[in-house]
View 1: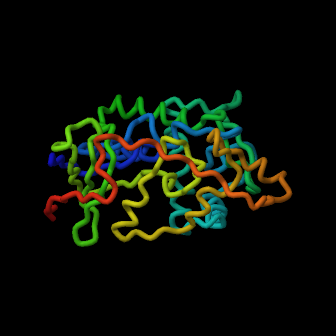
View 2: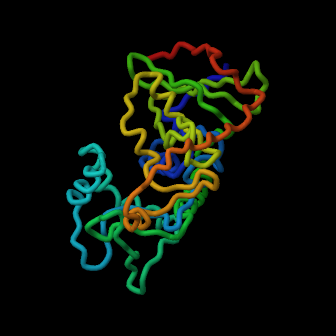
View 3: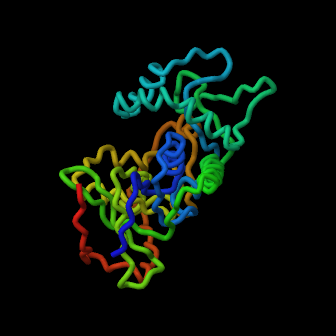
Length: 289
Protein backbone atom coordinates (compact mmCIF):
# COMPACT_ATOMS: atom_id res chain seq x y z
CA UNK A 1 0.00 0.00 0.00
CA UNK A 2 1.30 3.43 -0.98
CA UNK A 3 1.64 5.85 1.95
CA UNK A 4 1.49 9.62 1.48
CA UNK A 5 2.12 11.97 4.40
CA UNK A 6 0.52 15.39 4.80
CA UNK A 7 -0.14 17.98 7.45
CA UNK A 8 -3.80 18.14 6.36
CA UNK A 9 -5.89 16.18 3.88
CA UNK A 10 -9.16 17.60 2.57
CA UNK A 11 -11.63 14.88 1.62
CA UNK A 12 -14.00 16.26 -1.00
CA UNK A 13 -13.74 18.91 -3.71
CA UNK A 14 -17.00 20.82 -3.51
CA UNK A 15 -17.03 24.53 -2.75
CA UNK A 16 -16.40 23.94 0.97
CA UNK A 17 -13.46 21.58 0.48
CA UNK A 18 -11.80 23.77 -2.15
CA UNK A 19 -12.25 26.89 -0.03
CA UNK A 20 -10.84 25.11 3.04
CA UNK A 21 -7.71 24.05 1.16
CA UNK A 22 -7.16 27.57 -0.14
CA UNK A 23 -7.64 29.09 3.31
CA UNK A 24 -5.08 26.69 4.79
CA UNK A 25 -2.58 27.65 2.11
CA UNK A 26 -3.26 31.35 2.77
CA UNK A 27 -2.58 30.72 6.47
CA UNK A 28 0.84 29.29 5.63
CA UNK A 29 0.07 25.54 5.69
CA UNK A 30 2.00 24.17 2.72
CA UNK A 31 1.81 20.39 3.11
CA UNK A 32 -1.84 19.82 2.19
CA UNK A 33 -3.71 17.77 -0.40
CA UNK A 34 -7.23 17.27 -1.72
CA UNK A 35 -8.59 13.74 -2.20
CA UNK A 36 -11.66 13.46 -4.43
CA UNK A 37 -13.58 11.28 -6.84
CA UNK A 38 -13.18 14.13 -9.30
CA UNK A 39 -13.25 17.91 -9.55
CA UNK A 40 -16.29 17.52 -11.77
CA UNK A 41 -18.17 15.35 -9.25
CA UNK A 42 -20.35 16.16 -6.27
CA UNK A 43 -23.23 18.51 -5.71
CA UNK A 44 -21.64 21.97 -5.77
CA UNK A 45 -20.53 21.85 -9.39
CA UNK A 46 -23.47 19.77 -10.67
CA UNK A 47 -26.53 21.24 -9.06
CA UNK A 48 -28.83 24.13 -9.85
CA UNK A 49 -32.01 25.88 -8.86
CA UNK A 50 -34.37 28.46 -10.26
CA UNK A 51 -32.62 30.96 -7.95
CA UNK A 52 -29.61 29.38 -6.30
CA UNK A 53 -28.85 31.51 -3.26
CA UNK A 54 -25.65 32.43 -1.45
CA UNK A 55 -26.37 33.35 2.17
CA UNK A 56 -24.31 35.77 4.25
CA UNK A 57 -24.46 38.75 6.60
CA UNK A 58 -26.57 41.57 5.15
CA UNK A 59 -24.35 44.20 3.48
CA UNK A 60 -26.84 45.89 1.18
CA UNK A 61 -28.80 49.13 1.56
CA UNK A 62 -29.99 50.35 4.95
CA UNK A 63 -30.36 46.96 6.61
CA UNK A 64 -28.80 46.89 10.07
CA UNK A 65 -27.44 43.38 10.46
CA UNK A 66 -24.98 41.85 12.92
CA UNK A 67 -23.22 38.51 13.42
CA UNK A 68 -25.36 37.78 16.50
CA UNK A 69 -28.58 38.53 14.61
CA UNK A 70 -27.58 36.26 11.73
CA UNK A 71 -26.47 33.54 14.16
CA UNK A 72 -29.89 33.66 15.84
CA UNK A 73 -31.55 33.13 12.46
CA UNK A 74 -29.24 30.22 11.66
CA UNK A 75 -29.79 28.69 15.09
CA UNK A 76 -33.52 28.87 14.49
CA UNK A 77 -32.99 26.52 11.53
CA UNK A 78 -31.42 23.83 13.76
CA UNK A 79 -27.78 24.97 13.58
CA UNK A 80 -25.64 24.64 16.70
CA UNK A 81 -25.30 28.02 18.41
CA UNK A 82 -21.49 28.22 18.45
CA UNK A 83 -21.23 27.04 14.85
CA UNK A 84 -23.93 29.50 13.81
CA UNK A 85 -21.99 32.41 15.34
CA UNK A 86 -18.75 31.35 13.62
CA UNK A 87 -20.53 31.08 10.27
CA UNK A 88 -22.17 34.47 10.73
CA UNK A 89 -18.96 36.19 11.84
CA UNK A 90 -16.87 34.89 8.94
CA UNK A 91 -19.57 35.04 6.24
CA UNK A 92 -18.54 38.43 4.84
CA UNK A 93 -14.88 37.40 4.71
CA UNK A 94 -15.78 34.21 2.84
CA UNK A 95 -18.05 36.09 0.44
CA UNK A 96 -15.40 38.74 -0.26
CA UNK A 97 -12.90 35.99 -1.04
CA UNK A 98 -15.24 34.57 -3.69
CA UNK A 99 -15.71 38.02 -5.20
CA UNK A 100 -11.94 38.58 -5.29
CA UNK A 101 -11.29 35.35 -7.20
CA UNK A 102 -13.89 36.18 -9.84
CA UNK A 103 -17.30 34.80 -8.86
CA UNK A 104 -19.69 37.20 -10.72
CA UNK A 105 -22.10 38.23 -7.96
CA UNK A 106 -24.21 41.18 -9.21
CA UNK A 107 -23.51 44.67 -7.90
CA UNK A 108 -24.88 48.14 -8.49
CA UNK A 109 -23.14 51.32 -9.65
CA UNK A 110 -21.97 52.02 -6.10
CA UNK A 111 -20.39 48.61 -5.62
CA UNK A 112 -23.15 47.22 -3.41
CA UNK A 113 -23.92 43.57 -3.94
CA UNK A 114 -27.56 42.81 -4.61
CA UNK A 115 -29.43 41.41 -1.64
CA UNK A 116 -32.88 39.90 -1.16
CA UNK A 117 -34.87 38.17 1.53
CA UNK A 118 -35.37 34.43 1.36
CA UNK A 119 -37.13 31.76 3.42
CA UNK A 120 -38.84 34.28 5.72
CA UNK A 121 -35.51 35.91 6.59
CA UNK A 122 -35.91 39.33 8.29
CA UNK A 123 -33.12 41.00 6.28
CA UNK A 124 -31.70 40.98 2.75
CA UNK A 125 -28.92 38.50 3.37
CA UNK A 126 -29.26 36.44 0.21
CA UNK A 127 -27.58 37.01 -3.13
CA UNK A 128 -27.14 34.99 -6.30
CA UNK A 129 -25.35 34.98 -9.63
CA UNK A 130 -27.94 32.76 -11.30
CA UNK A 131 -29.24 29.20 -11.36
CA UNK A 132 -25.72 27.80 -11.12
CA UNK A 133 -24.19 29.94 -8.38
CA UNK A 134 -22.36 27.03 -6.75
CA UNK A 135 -20.96 25.92 -10.11
CA UNK A 136 -19.52 29.40 -10.67
CA UNK A 137 -18.01 29.24 -7.18
CA UNK A 138 -16.39 25.86 -7.86
CA UNK A 139 -14.93 26.93 -11.19
CA UNK A 140 -13.31 29.99 -9.62
CA UNK A 141 -12.04 27.98 -6.64
CA UNK A 142 -10.58 25.25 -8.88
CA UNK A 143 -8.62 27.88 -10.82
CA UNK A 144 -7.20 29.17 -7.54
CA UNK A 145 -6.28 25.66 -6.35
CA UNK A 146 -4.44 25.07 -9.61
CA UNK A 147 -2.76 28.49 -9.40
CA UNK A 148 -1.56 27.72 -5.84
CA UNK A 149 -0.39 24.27 -7.02
CA UNK A 150 -2.25 22.43 -4.27
CA UNK A 151 -2.03 18.67 -4.98
CA UNK A 152 -5.35 17.13 -6.01
CA UNK A 153 -5.72 13.35 -6.10
CA UNK A 154 -8.66 12.67 -8.41
CA UNK A 155 -10.49 9.39 -9.11
CA UNK A 156 -10.01 8.33 -5.50
CA UNK A 157 -12.79 6.73 -3.48
CA UNK A 158 -12.32 6.98 0.28
CA UNK A 159 -13.06 3.66 1.97
CA UNK A 160 -12.00 4.27 5.57
CA UNK A 161 -11.11 7.06 7.98
CA UNK A 162 -8.12 6.16 10.17
CA UNK A 163 -8.09 7.16 13.83
CA UNK A 164 -5.56 6.86 16.66
CA UNK A 165 -6.75 7.31 20.24
CA UNK A 166 -10.01 8.76 19.00
CA UNK A 167 -8.39 11.33 16.72
CA UNK A 168 -8.19 11.42 12.94
CA UNK A 169 -4.90 10.14 11.55
CA UNK A 170 -5.68 10.05 7.84
CA UNK A 171 -7.72 8.01 5.40
CA UNK A 172 -7.58 5.01 3.07
CA UNK A 173 -8.59 5.63 -0.54
CA UNK A 174 -8.90 3.40 -3.58
CA UNK A 175 -7.32 4.60 -6.82
CA UNK A 176 -9.95 3.69 -9.40
CA UNK A 177 -7.43 3.52 -12.24
CA UNK A 178 -4.70 1.52 -10.46
CA UNK A 179 -4.14 -2.21 -10.68
CA UNK A 180 -5.84 -4.19 -7.92
CA UNK A 181 -2.62 -5.00 -6.12
CA UNK A 182 -1.73 -1.28 -5.91
CA UNK A 183 -5.11 0.37 -5.71
CA UNK A 184 -5.17 1.33 -2.02
CA UNK A 185 -3.39 4.41 -0.73
CA UNK A 186 -2.94 5.57 2.84
CA UNK A 187 -3.05 9.35 3.21
CA UNK A 188 -1.47 9.78 6.63
CA UNK A 189 -2.31 13.20 8.03
CA UNK A 190 -2.31 15.14 11.27
CA UNK A 191 -5.68 16.62 10.29
CA UNK A 192 -8.56 15.53 8.06
CA UNK A 193 -11.12 18.01 6.78
CA UNK A 194 -14.29 16.05 6.09
CA UNK A 195 -15.86 18.00 3.20
CA UNK A 196 -17.91 15.29 1.52
CA UNK A 197 -21.17 17.21 1.33
CA UNK A 198 -24.65 15.89 1.93
CA UNK A 199 -25.57 12.21 2.37
CA UNK A 200 -26.79 11.68 -1.19
CA UNK A 201 -26.08 7.96 -1.37
CA UNK A 202 -27.72 7.35 1.99
CA UNK A 203 -31.20 7.67 0.55
CA UNK A 204 -33.07 5.10 -1.51
CA UNK A 205 -34.56 7.98 -3.48
CA UNK A 206 -32.17 10.91 -3.71
CA UNK A 207 -32.60 14.49 -4.89
CA UNK A 208 -28.82 14.89 -5.06
CA UNK A 209 -27.08 14.83 -8.48
CA UNK A 210 -26.47 11.29 -9.70
CA UNK A 211 -22.69 11.81 -9.45
CA UNK A 212 -22.94 12.68 -5.75
CA UNK A 213 -23.02 9.75 -3.35
CA UNK A 214 -21.44 11.38 -0.31
CA UNK A 215 -19.29 9.65 2.29
CA UNK A 216 -21.04 10.35 5.57
CA UNK A 217 -20.97 6.61 6.31
CA UNK A 218 -17.20 6.80 6.83
CA UNK A 219 -17.72 9.20 9.72
CA UNK A 220 -20.55 7.14 11.19
CA UNK A 221 -18.33 4.04 11.15
CA UNK A 222 -15.76 5.66 13.45
CA UNK A 223 -18.35 6.91 15.91
CA UNK A 224 -19.47 10.32 14.65
CA UNK A 225 -23.02 11.27 15.55
CA UNK A 226 -25.53 12.34 12.91
CA UNK A 227 -28.45 14.70 13.32
CA UNK A 228 -31.34 15.92 11.16
CA UNK A 229 -30.52 13.65 8.21
CA UNK A 230 -34.13 13.71 6.92
CA UNK A 231 -33.98 17.51 6.69
CA UNK A 232 -31.16 17.22 4.18
CA UNK A 233 -33.82 16.45 1.56
CA UNK A 234 -36.61 18.61 2.95
CA UNK A 235 -38.42 20.70 0.35
CA UNK A 236 -39.40 20.56 -3.29
CA UNK A 237 -37.08 19.00 -5.84
CA UNK A 238 -37.17 16.90 -8.98
CA UNK A 239 -35.85 13.34 -8.74
CA UNK A 240 -35.96 12.58 -12.46
CA UNK A 241 -34.19 15.72 -13.56
CA UNK A 242 -32.20 16.65 -10.44
CA UNK A 243 -33.23 20.23 -9.83
CA UNK A 244 -34.13 22.10 -6.65
CA UNK A 245 -36.60 24.93 -6.28
CA UNK A 246 -36.02 28.03 -4.20
CA UNK A 247 -37.66 29.06 -0.95
CA UNK A 248 -39.92 31.37 -2.95
CA UNK A 249 -41.96 28.37 -4.05
CA UNK A 250 -42.05 27.05 -0.49
CA UNK A 251 -43.50 30.34 0.73
CA UNK A 252 -46.36 30.52 -1.78
CA UNK A 253 -47.47 26.88 -1.66
CA UNK A 254 -50.17 26.51 1.02
CA UNK A 255 -49.45 22.88 1.88
CA UNK A 256 -47.97 19.56 0.79
CA UNK A 257 -50.30 16.64 0.07
CA UNK A 258 -49.07 13.07 0.10
CA UNK A 259 -50.67 10.82 -2.52
CA UNK A 260 -49.62 7.68 -0.66
CA UNK A 261 -47.91 6.34 -3.76
CA UNK A 262 -44.38 4.93 -3.37
CA UNK A 263 -41.57 6.98 -4.86
CA UNK A 264 -39.53 5.03 -7.44
CA UNK A 265 -36.03 4.10 -6.36
CA UNK A 266 -33.00 5.55 -8.05
CA UNK A 267 -30.98 2.85 -9.79
CA UNK A 268 -27.37 3.06 -8.56
CA UNK A 269 -24.57 3.53 -11.08
CA UNK A 270 -22.60 0.46 -12.11
CA UNK A 271 -19.76 -0.33 -9.75
CA UNK A 272 -16.26 0.25 -11.08
CA UNK A 273 -14.50 -2.97 -12.00
CA UNK A 274 -11.58 -1.99 -9.77
CA UNK A 275 -13.52 -1.18 -6.61
CA UNK A 276 -13.59 -3.83 -3.88
CA UNK A 277 -16.88 -5.72 -3.52
CA UNK A 278 -19.26 -4.76 -0.76
CA UNK A 279 -18.27 -6.24 2.59
CA UNK A 280 -14.61 -6.72 1.63
CA UNK A 281 -11.98 -5.76 4.18
CA UNK A 282 -9.09 -3.36 3.78
CA UNK A 283 -5.95 -3.75 5.85
CA UNK A 284 -5.13 -0.45 7.56
CA UNK A 285 -1.47 0.32 8.30
CA UNK A 286 -0.54 1.14 11.86
CA UNK A 287 -0.51 4.91 12.21
CA UNK A 288 2.20 6.43 14.36
CA UNK A 289 1.33 9.13 16.83
